[in-house]
Image 1 (cartoon, rainbow, N blue to C red):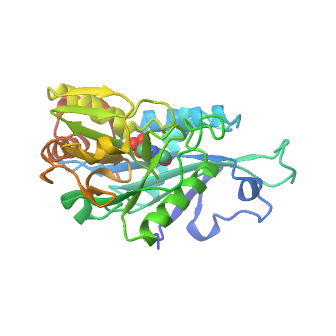
Image 2: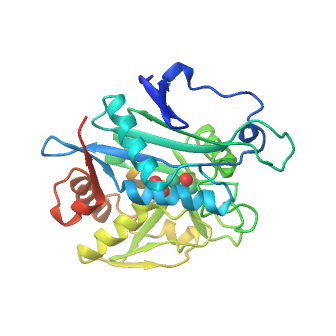
Length: 306
Ligand SMILES: *Cc1c(COP(=O)(O)O)cnc(C)c1O
């Protein structure tokens, strides 16, 4: 269960957690048209707090809305301010942030008509998404029997609510089969991403990640690519198949929720030596960045006071 906080920002004002409700004829509830973000704020080494890459997340929220032709009735700066306001109201020096824009009640046909676009921002405490143990020892993954969306079936660059039925199916399947996560292939059969994480592999010192074809363009992915290059690694965006993951020296997932989680096994094949050398290096550097210990990346931090 998500831990209950004091307030949720709802269409421009903070309302008590239990009063942030919608009608059952809310259009998005029936047809899945909505867009959301997953953002984290971290406690900083110097005692302060910051939201990691807040501007980029809010930008992507509006891009997702643009892709599916939803007009969010606020601008980006207003949403940035509202996020900080919500964190403060809930007295959260760190935690997870979930903005969501959805189509409200009105017309009930598939065409959303002129139904209002409603916007909420919720925050709650969330530790390691796949567990502390996963960050440390890596996870066991199976290739999903569900493909990641074809690029003309769903708009894969948007964090669009309905897209996540695909993720739920893959996640449930993986967990029911005793795995931690599912790896989805694209409709051509190449590796795409996980249910809410992008993937990287390391082979002979080169870090490889899937190109921006069918994947969600992760902000953690972009951050790690930049960080890795800065640390002297060679990073390439290139398609690869599942057996290239089997024979990789390392593989790892990344995302706002999952942060950087090493993959120990794919389809019962151990990956590399299991020492996660590069993954652990990047993970440590990533945590330094989000914790405000690397001045070079201060511009990725949106500081606030609780
Ligand atoms: C949110 C998400 C990611 C990770 O994106 P971040 O910006 O790093 O949080 C990757 N894949 C999918 C499908 C996602 O929904």
